[in-house]
Length: 498
Image (tube, rainbow, N blue to C red; front, side):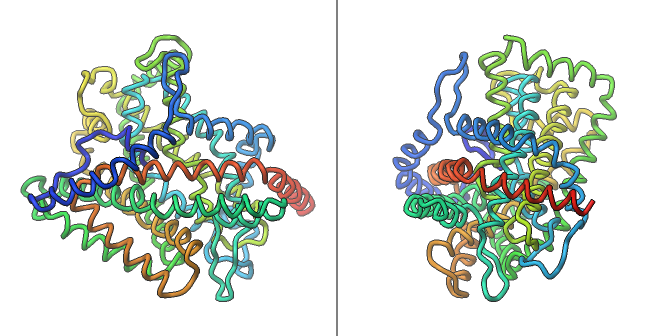
């Protein structure tokens, strides 16, 4: 995923004409005051040992730690069961739902594995040094528990419609779950806040930013300034919108079929490339691990020493795997199962893949290649730095890396189109014309995203995505006993079967 304030400025293309520039300025002026107010609130930071700690990061990190302790380290103890379930253990087509455990996981992973896994890690290491990589992994492990809890609740409180389709996610968890606790008014209010933030936020980071990044990457691999698409973002956006529309018109089953094939391919391509670079740089691995361990605990560092490295590592993990935002529970809620905790266990694999595996490999590639240590102040960070790290080992590596980045952006578009749709239907109700209206609007915003500067609107959408963490985590705290009862009952049944 993506966090605007950590991304390098050059990633957003300039408009191709004066008229577009005028539109950009108008949009920017309209949204600037609101974007600034919301961003200042949600990303409000306090000083922590010389480093700035955004309160939203503390909110999510504390929840992850508390839930990990409360559920007895289910992120570690439940890993084996999660793998068994992913391989089809106990699955049945007679269970309510629309997709398999694997398809639900692939759809959710497609929404979190993105540009941040490639470029965001480079920015994190540039600011916090190699030690930030250790805290990134620690935060990823803790985030596995948060995903477990929110996805278990997502299945438990989902709505299965008469036609067999499913609606789920934090909106339904908050409304129905808190009503069970006698907090119906609080539940409805939190659910509405979540749904509004989701709909507006998905247009930014899950749509226009991804379309913009896809356009940048496509132009880069198709000739740069000489590409037939250079300066024609509207054309690329139209083709991308048509492809996304063709896939999403079939709903979650169509999206899951595509992500079920696309995600393993793009993850394998990136992981394979990273491992190849590490194999070439194997002599530097011992020093890399030593630098990570030393940087994580010693007071030396670029951004606030060891505390700064810890904060930056947690920040990158939170912004990468989205644990605590609740968005993934929307995809996981569509799974075919009659035991909610089974999908919670499968979901804990998501931060492991996204953060512990992919982000860690990116960090090791950057450290062993030496580009972070030698990058001068003001040098390109983000994906450019990661690309340079790959190129040091394999000269032609930036080309497949660009393809991977393009696939990451496209897959995120697919998953977030479904997330936004479920937030929309929660607010306005179900119906073919209502759903199609959202899908058409989503595709139109793809064209806009590839064509203009995004400015303050993107800042607003970015901030609203993290507003979702406030009501979602409140629901997790209040409904944690429900999850623990579900987990205890599942373990008893599993022991009985064994």
